[in-house]
Length: 400
Image (tube, rainbow, N blue to C red; front, top):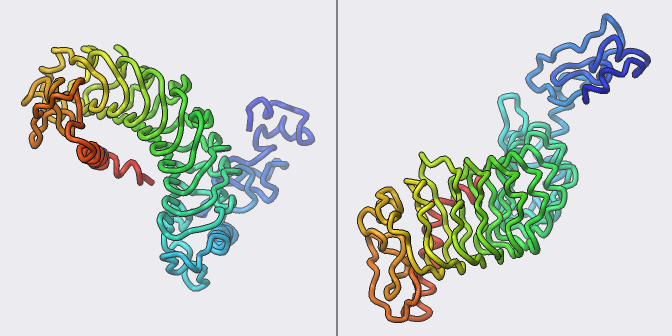
């Protein structure tokens, strides 16, 4: 309740003058018969029931009604989303088994639903928006199902932290910006097109954002600087173009994948300039159209794994070739070649690794060439890049 309303002496028949905000709504985890205070001897009393609601203005402290409402919502999902044909529907819609023991449902100690995990389970249809009324829902994972997803009412899910909707035919992010409590959003491999939606800019608590493998185009918008808590940013395999942003406001960023897009120009001197550099940082800029010299300014990150192959680079600043912590020690072992194979050489990783030296290739006009022997090399490079990414990103793609 806005504090200014609690100063309206004339509100609620003058009760606001006497009891402040409590005269409008009882605070969270408290209750009265009317959900607010109207008498001297009727305080908003604390709820000792472990199933008490965190919403304001409660008229009871949880109990049977609270449990039944959760079960009704889950039954609605089962009925409207083809539950009878799910790959696993163990205990669903059972009157004899508590809903916390249904497949894919996690509950807290108070037997309230905190997670719905139905990924790759043959779920169909449109998920009922009533799912957002689960009062303690923290994680919703529906990946790899052919579903419709309507975010109307998502603002009711005040505890929702993780939303996993990759590979679900999602085609709009309308209303997603209302999910202000989200810390992780995965919408990889869908049918999303156009500019990156500004809805995402409202999710200021995000730590992980995965929008890879869509059809986003245009440039990276300026409002990305409004997401200062991001630690993992995955934008690979879209159609994003223009110069690289610096990500100057993202001090927490540890994992950036911009590979297989259409970025052009040089790596800016301020790229990731404010990142906290005492931890290992991963940056994949491979398979774009970046040019010029890999800049000395990157040397402020002493423990960096950087993928630069498949671009149009002409040089690597020599100071970078002495950074022992780069590319898991490959720079220590192989110098500049541990960053990019020089022009006139190539391999399927585009740099010298323990298993792959840079080999002579007359057709390699640029550093980091991955294709010297036809289509097979292109396929091999794509597969190896995917495997490298999967090693570090699998948990991020499927994070709950």
